Length: 607
Image (cartoon, rainbow, N blue to C red; front, side, top):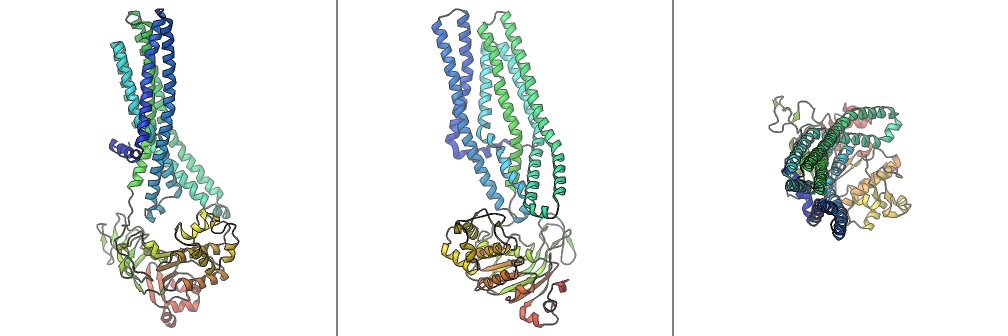
């Protein structure tokens, strides 16, 4: 059973309703005024009935009728006004919560995002927050207001006749207690249903993003099979959640029928004893019916709370996920090109959990402190040490899975090594503010992401201070002038997230343009020319010469042709450094791996 302390409800409400104090005040005033008028109107009707039976003055009857209509109309107007204010409160509060969740997720580590699908996070951020709309707008006020309405009705019933008041008070306590117990029973089923929604959204998002590969490889039937399996697993979860909700609803119907029977029996008995007038009998029965509204409203709020409580639990869990990376220190990097130093760096993607570790000497240690690598997962990097002087270019070679991309990710602090130290110009990388590092280290991969926004925003990554002249000079340098001038709206032309209308080479050159405009001190190219045709690759090669002027560079490549301009060579195999040294020295040494690679013009010698 999910249990969240009331303190956390209050904290959540206070956080997102405090900025809207005025609106919340008016929601409370209009709702409570409407409730007060609902208690008043039956008294007016009782007066009208008793006066009519006693053949009272027509003027009094007319005034009572007019008062009844005015009160009824005012109640409806207040309800509309309360709905308007509460919807505004809910919209503002949920948008603020969405903003906090999006910002929180964007600041979480890459390991967090790699363990979850985008669709699942969308459901967590949007679906769960939508479930809290009523919780923010009316939950507290509705519950409080209807409790007051319930208490007010019972006080009037006691005032009219203690027997009617006592019997209906007992009924109300039993009804509320029963509904609260059923609410607690239903909460876990709604939580499971919310999780099923999230997993389904993640499945759809992942498959739709890969539609080209699915169609090209004839995997549509397999995806549909998975789709049906998910729906079959989803159905019993949905049935259990709906059954829990239906049980709450049907129980309330039975209770209200019992309440009406109690009221009718009490009215009949008191009328027979001549203890009440006909108007009072109507009043007692009307109030017993009116009891249904606050109890039903409280029931509905509790039913909504089942969904809200499950969403609050999931939102709380998401907000409690903390980045594994520290925000860094306050040291800054020098201007210009940056030297790169790795000192005994060990890294495993599974090296941050509570598993056992194998020491370099073969001993097994618990997770009391980080040690070289996991017993259950071979490390991606093992004892890597090298120094790349500022202004030089390093070429990294190795088979797929040898640790080349992992090394680049560590330089961007997408992950931290378990042991060892990485320095940029003698500054430990974890002592640099995490937000500053991407401004000094630029990376281009073979998978280019373009956003559904203007070309200007795609090139500057939404940086407003880069001039149009600088952008146009960069495009001209990369040979994109002809393509640019053919665009209908120049820099304001919208590009799609799927690179629609762009060749792979053009998309790659746009990624190069981003690096030029950022002007970092260290540039990493991770297979950046692997998808280019020879002519475009030659164009990129010329641009790289300009890019690496007065900058340190790292080129990760499979093809030796892309390493013509590097100063140093690093060869990796199975996470270990096989060879490191000056390119020309290694090329002239018949015993070196690099020499054999040049002779064979392939990477087969790395096996």
